Image (tube, rainbow, N blue to C red; front, side):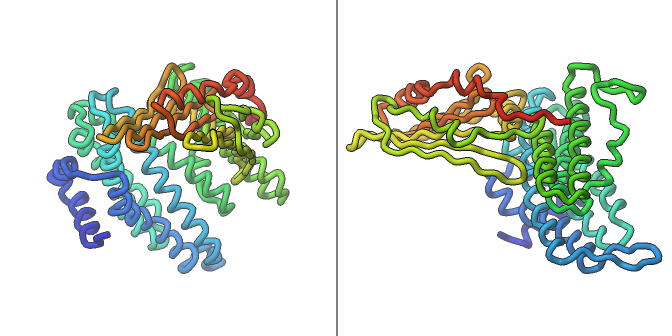
Length: 425
C-alpha cells in the first residue's frame, strides 16, 4: 500500500481529470488491487470524519451545548458504515457493468470498478469539510456535483461508451448510487439506532409508488415503477424499525429488522429459512452411486436474516468422493433473484489447468469450476431464486458433478420457494 501514490492519484483525478482518465483506463488492475490499493483507504475518510465530529467534537444543539455520541457507539457506527460503503462501491460497479451495453459500452467489471471508485473520490475527499460544524451538507453537495462531472468524463474511457451517451449513462448510474446509499444508510440506522439516514427518509416522504397520485411517476410495470415501489417498501419497513426501537421490545425489533433487510434485498419481507429437520431430508442416501458417510444441517441468523444449510459427504472408501451442500438463502433470495434476473451475472475464465464460469441456463443461475490436473471441481445451481445446490469432488469430468446435482429433489425445493415468507406490510 503506497499512501503517496494514493494521494497523487486523488489529486490528479480531482485537478486534472481530462488527462487522468485515459491513464486510468489503460492501467492493468485487479479488483483486489483496486480495493487494497485505493478504495479501502479513501472510503475510510467519511466514517472517520463522522466519528471525530459526532464523538469527539460533538453536535451543537442551540441553547443546550454540544451533544456527543459515546465513543463506543461512534466506533460501531463508523465500522459498519465503512464496511457497507465498500459493499456499496462494488454493487454500483456491478450495475455500471451490467448497464454498459445499453449505452453502447463494453462490459468490463474492473473498468466499472475503476470509474465508480475514482468518481467517488470527490465525495470521499469533500467529506473532510464536514468536520467543520454546519458544513456537512455543503460538503456532501459539493462531492456529489463534482462526482457527477468525473463520472461523465470517465465513462467513455473506461466503459467505451460513445461520448453522446455518457450523460444518460451518468444519470442512470447516479440514480442507482443514490438507491444503494439509501439502503446502506437504512441498514446502518437499523443496527445503530442513532437516526442515521433520517434526512433521506424525510426526503422520500412524498414518494408516490408506481406512478399513482398527484406526484406522478413511472408507468406501471416499468423498471422505474419497480424502483418506486421498492423505495416505498423501504420507507415503510424503516418506520417499523423506528417504532420497534421506541417500544424496547427485542422481539419486535428483530422482526422489524428482518422486514427491513427483506425489503432491501427484494425478497418482499422477512423470510424464515427452512428448519434443519426440513432441509436435511433433501440430502439423498446415495449420490452418483456413492453411499452417504456423513450428514448435518443447521440454521443461523443475523440481523433478522436466517440462512439454513444441509451438508453431506459421499465416498466409496477409496479415491472417489463427493460433497453436497444445499443452502436456503432465506431473505437473501431477493439478491439471488436479482443476480439471476436483470443483474446479468456472467463470468468465464480458462487456463491450461481448467476453467471456471458462471452463467444463466434458462432462468437458473449456474456455476462450474474444473481442474484438469486433479480431475476435480465444483458445480452449483440456484433453484427458485432461493435454494443453492452445490456438488464438489472428483470424477471423470464436470458432467459427473452435474449428474450428481441433478439427482437432488429440485422439484421438492421448488415447491417450498414461498415457505416461511412473510410479506412486508
